[in-house]
Length: 298
Image (cartoon, rainbow, N blue to C red; front, side, top):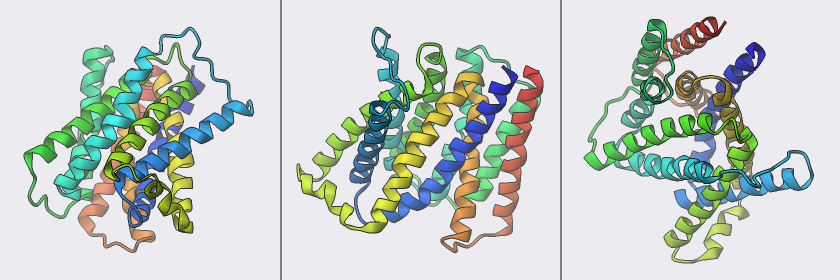
């Protein structure tokens, strides 16, 4: 069990780190298409990859006779509701405010863990979780600007759905493998986002395939569908099978660190001392929660 706990911690770190780089590829792809078309192509491609893995026998899928209702709820929560709330929430607010709001996920996750999962939380874990949010606030510095109430409520919805996803995934871990949970999530995601994309393009199917004429779009989809969707979500579903949702989600703030560093090194974005301190706080907080959790389980 100790080895699986360690692997789960590393899986959470890997999954959320992968999400950090996804912002670069999403930003590039969105120069060529709309958000819902990108999401539709991303999840259709990811679902295709999952089915290929099943057909060639690389991974076994066995949903027969199992109660998949909870998995359908899981798929509705993440990716469908989460991505809708996040996309429109960011559009109605500012990037800095969105970053701080999404940074609340570990704190809300810790509270939900104690209330619904009856998980125990140490003082150090609580302090590190809260300080990680401070780190996110410093890293996304630049002023909140005008924040609309609908935008705030949508981002709050993104926070809640992100937490519910981890908790439901953990609750279904005894019956379904990480791959099976990921499979159903992406099945619902591909159907929902394709329908939304078709509504957005007024039924123009050609609009979904139009960005595929650009080679850079293929590179973005390859990362977003295979690495950031299949690999990252499977890793996180594995992680919450063996460690608490709150402990796994503290790594979600590491996404902020990766995206900031990638922005500086690749996109040559500006960076100041306050943001550097914020990154340091996040890293220290993440390892504080991780090591304290490992010590408690030992």
